[in-house]
Length: 332
Ligand code: ACO
Image 1: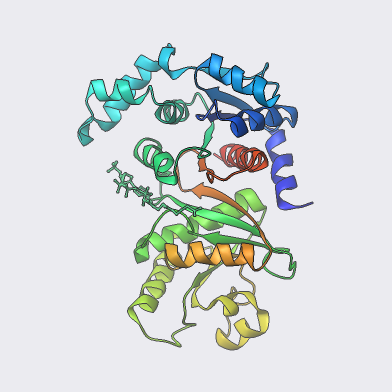
Image 2 (image 1 turned 180 degrees about the vertical axis):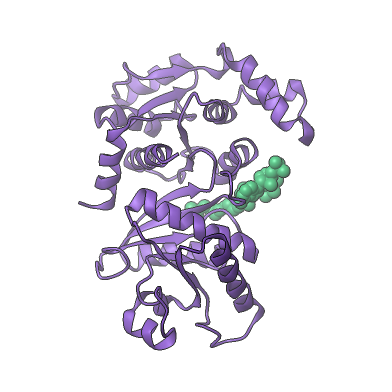
């Protein structure tokens, strides 16, 4: 069974309520209908019900069993605005601004998750990554014990000898442009958790990547990765984690054995931590486009799961992201 079939099977075991703020967007409406058909989650669409239903009729989607909430006339809006004001007044948000903000489906959806009225959120077919991330960072915040929200890409590679039966977790490829050593350590620990929750990798092997393996090169950039490795060991002493190491030393047993002797991770890594966002983002795209891997993205480190889509997403991308979000919600 492929990774997404496994994720979907897990999602079906405990149905979660997932809010879709872009409720009148055609692909989102089609995806919501498919999610109900496949029994993956209980989707909630936000928007003007007349417009949502008109879109559904136009694209031939059956949304008769799906709840639609209009943030502009919701009975919860006042409560959400008051809570949002309480959370953000120290940052200069006024009561009036909070009232206006919850009329925006993105903020309304985030508040539903915050207040426990949805288990997770998926958005981004229309909004940019930043539009979706900022309210999640400001309101949902990080999980207890974590300081950084980041992302992982689940890379399902055709070469099944790599990682965990061809599955590799790449992090961070979306969120933190220039992580400090401490942030990199938190990213590594979050990615290991993602590997356990979503990929069924019970004992993740985490490699912190660099252009150097175990001191083979000297540079400030290498020192940062070494420092991140030290901090991550302190934060998660039981995690199989090692660094700094080159990509090939992390993945290929013979190279790992020769360049990083005695490492339990080198040559067998299934979670790969990139030193910054440029490396991570370029790395996942090379693996996808040149290596022929399927790539599935999730955010990690948030107190409750919220996930972003690419604006070029397909209906199936939305369906799979909802399934991933539901499985993340099950693990809380
Ligand atoms: N983890 C936890 N909290 C964070 C993080 C983080 N990684 N980043 C910001 N925050 C918090 C801040 O502390 C702040 O909290 P506060 O308001 O309570 O004090 C709040 O979030 C807003 O922070 P800002 O610094 O004002 O946010 P910023 O405008 O820098 O936006 C963002 C943050 C959107 C994540 C930014 O770092 C960013 O644009 N990252 C890159 C996104 C991107 O374009 N990715 C690549 C494309 S996606 C793809 O290819 C698949």
